[in-house]
Length: 221
Image 1 (cartoon, helix red, strand yellow):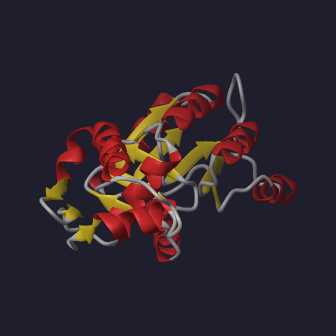
Image 2 (cartoon, one colour; image 1 turned 180 degrees about the vertical axis):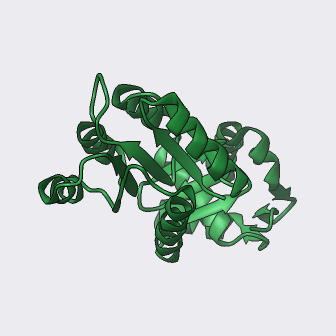
């Protein structure tokens, strides 16, 4: 399942795409113009954007440019424009594909599937239910909402996830996250682990303390 941002100023079109995508098993968020889409994109994490080109407030080209400044995301443009210049410009601003209106919903879903499959092959994401850690973007999201996390907490989480199911000693964690030469007592690690659990909300319960040893991330991925 992927999280899709559907952007079109025509209510019927965006709702039609949203319903079909939901039927295919995707989570969808709908926006009626480019400005609203960019605002949503700043607050949530999306796997792919399906966006109309001609919209009020902010057109699709400008919206995608602003999104790319935040995070690289694949985008399929919907357009009634059929000229070569318009398609080329769309690719120049970062679009992955172009679908000309009127279009087949089945074909659109197939194009989405192809792009997501290609993206997943080179994915830098570690996913546990609705917890997503993106190494390339250096971001953590829970239920699509970005989590503000200090760098040390982020490095702790990444190390725990990459060694999920394994008991990690305190010394191993400190050496990996702070460096082999770092001289610290156990309280430093415990304090950061406490902060990490707080950042992760309900997912903090997946981090288990192993008395006399260290910590383990329990959830299988």
